[in-house]
Image: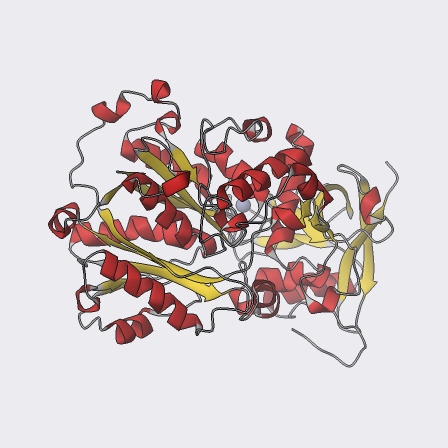
Length: 402
Length: 141
Ligand SMILES: [Zn+2]
């Protein structure tokens, strides 16, 4: 938000019992599609992990906590490859794409409680060349959100995959609030613009106009092809430790001011929610802002989990950047673009950088808060938000500060 | 997924526990939902206990079979191989008179003719000798 809008609440925020934990290392692989990474699904994650560990000034031996992405690896395998001889904390959060940001919260708690000193949060896949996202989702029922409910009550009707699950919410939003396809298009176009400033973005060099967006074929109406994130080979990782250890490492630590996660109700069944727009983030966001002692208007940028365009709009509402129902007008007019009031997904997001499970959103937030974002740097970025969205609407949020 | 001797090639529910009871009632040609004996709340999908009042007592109660369209998506490109020849098709959420919602399809309305609040009624579809799926058709207002 503009400097003039910044609340003085930051200075008045309550003194925390413990210093906030910090992100001290980030790592990414190249993000590629054709012909694929040429690495194994574990190998590509290990590459990102080693980069994050090295960037933090650490060695694999010092990593004593690992939080893998659900269904994409286990801590034991990471530890055995990275030489983590003293693995003490291993935990997987089963919230799909909301897992990495929820892991930030738990990693912070782990290091501040002494359960671990250095927690690695890796994630990645051969989302393009390996088992394609859509196939994984549609054929392995055991990994479906909702499990047997999805198998017994959704799949017989061809309700099989994320763009279908979420597009019923998008349609309902359009019905109740008048949200327009062009407004979803503003989100896709903003992400694509940002990707032009990111050398590692898959969609760099492939600009897109609103007309291009509207001309793209329907996939799961109201979702068009360009409402959907891009299946990518790639991995990213971050390392979390205490503020005290972060100071000793002498890097540019980024503080985790607050983290929170939540689930819709019921979380395992999409159709019978009294309020279909009350998702995990609806609970998590107020908690995070309360913990951090700040307001949405204090935020300089937001990296919002953008599996599909409407999820961005919906999360902007539930985080509180605008009122529910006002997300459509909010994303118009360049407000969420670099230079706008609230730059969103400055790296291009899952829609135009790469679908790396949202760990790339954390990496980008750290980069922005270190002032290392190059051409796409948000000027004077001091506080940023990262969100995650997964399964049938699980949500997570972290508020990060330079 | 259940595969039986028929030539029906779409995913089917696993008939076990409460789900078997739900679909067996459909096979008999009646749509039932669980209704709590404690607080009278209706519920779907089947659950062991009432999340509203905590009661374990419930019964299958007959639905009017009538409801209205709550939302839907039109799948233009199937993301499951069994549905690749079905496009475009529309998974539809129907809100029943009882207040519960279910994911289904409306068989006699083209995807681009669906409307929110369109009245619909159950139309059972015996897709295999064992399994009857509740689908819906347009109803008089
Ligand atoms: Zn009850």
